[in-house]
Image (cartoon, rainbow, N blue to C red; front, side, top):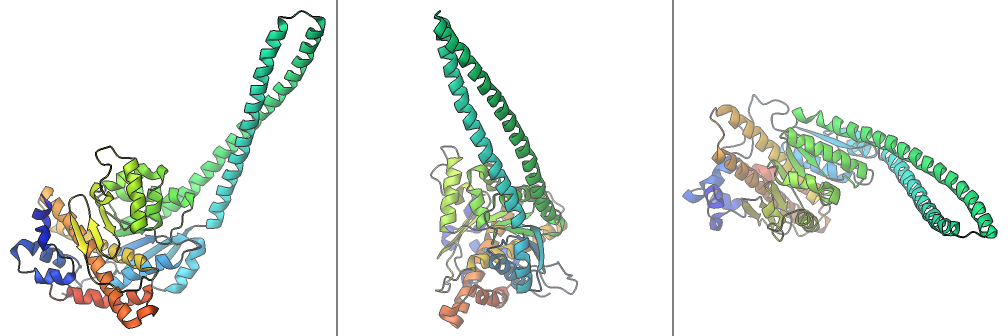
Length: 437
């Protein structure tokens, strides 16, 4: 179905939460009312710990400990029951001290990974130096062989004597060349063993996280992640396993930077077709993704905006947030606060993770209630619901920043925004068949 069939005419698309209420009685916009009614799992007497969402944040490094905390705490303030933070050993204690409500598990040590990386760089440097020395010696010996061949054509005793001396020197160089070739072989073996050790470390990180997948509704990757190459290798394994497990993904910050790198282009292409993924780029991150995607795409797709190429959801953050996938687009024009505090992007990542977790819960409940086969219309409604849920999360954070700014003005911080999220969502629930039952 077309966008208009799925979410109503473009002229009636809501841009603020109040628009959803205003359009409730509009026949062409009833879809929005239905989407709003399916945003939050109801609070019931039969609810148990975890009924309203279990999510994990993979982020937090020795330098960045606040970002994963903001994302995780935002999800808790939305109403998520359980949040786990997977992070570097160096970040685990600070994050645990920030909040007793978070389950924090260190999955690697930056110091240990740095040692592995430094060893690799040292071996690569030594290997390159040996190869260059051998190339120079080989070229020199090839030149000497040419001269010797020419000298063999001359018959003077003096020339023959010089030829014999030259051959003796050449033999010495040949021995040195063999020694260096043996050293190159040894270095390559050491490098192979080191890379196997790296693979074990990377696999251990990924396994620790992926074993939690059966208990999770959403995984958010990126807040405070850092840019360590071996951590990126682990992230790739985690993302691929998440796609295999059909797990909801929210990718933010350094996870998006990783996807813009040349070695991860194939992963970016696969994610572009994974519909249960939300990317949350800012302006610079969007440019990087656009360039990365264009470099790896066919000519027909070059020049299209990155949002239009993706089947997954892209939340392009800005003064006006644009939430889109290949079929559906919405804009959030809620008025936010005038203070652009650090960490608000992490608050949004955590809030979207909460809404995606609820979406996964409600999708599962509906699939259990409906024995009919899932046709294309049902799938399209699910896509629209996810776009709408991402849009609603943007509305909630914008509303929270506006209220926090009105109270704190220039002193406003991300923590102030998090403190407003609960009441904002409570006000958004009013008037809908959701909430407490």
